[in-house]
Structure formats: structure tokens, C-alpha cells
Image (tube, rainbow, N blue to C red; front, top):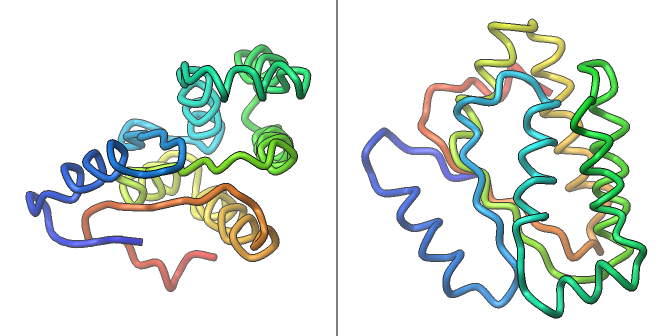
Length: 157
């Protein structure tokens, strides 16, 4: 996770990485996501925005799990976000296509979740991501988290 003070150019660096990376990258600004459900919706929406022909062909061959998940997350209830998040990661893992999630303002999102829904919900979001990273080491999916300092990550997850 890249954290530093405000106005140091983190977002510019991440956007440049998106342009030069050899993987499919989706940039998501999380500063308005105040629940993990909104984070998952943003991830699905960003993936649906990839218009690379190879990606679209791969999705079609795999039965376009994103289309099914997209229709599911439209009406996703707050309590069901974890299952949808797991299905997203499982589907991406089966594609075997490199995808990088460039998640900007991650600490802000976690703080918003904690303030609106409590520390337990914020903790659940951080634990879900940690679990993804620890359990799926062979997955082609990667996460780059950026944001400004101020989040006490030791007290979460």
C-alpha cells in the first residue's frame, strides 16, 4: 500500500502505471465508497469498462461471469457483499488473465465505512482483501492500494 501525505502525486503515478503496465489495469477512486458493497460494484463496473478485444473474447468463452455478476450487484444488499466479492475473485482467477486493480483513496474508503457502518464492517473489508492476497498467491489478480496517511491499519484486520 502506498500512503503519503496529500498532494504528493500518488494518483498521477498510478494513472501512468495504468498506461504502461503489461496487464489490464482498472483505476478506481474509492473516496466515495462508504460500504464494501459499493467497492465491489465499482470493481465490477470498472472491469465491464475494459474494451480490449482479447479480454472480451476471454469473457465470452468463460460464459461472461461478469455480466451475471453485474446484474447481481445492481441490487446487492449490504449483508451480501462478501459472497459477491468472493465470486468476483473466483471468476477472475478462472480466467487466468492478468488484472490489476489500482485502488486510490483506500484509507479514505475504510474510514468512511467505519464511520457509517462501524469498525466491524471496515474490519471485514480489510480482512476480505487480506484474505484474497494471502489465499490467492497464484492468482493473476493484483491490487495496488494508494491513499493519504491517517488510517491506523494496525487497528483494523
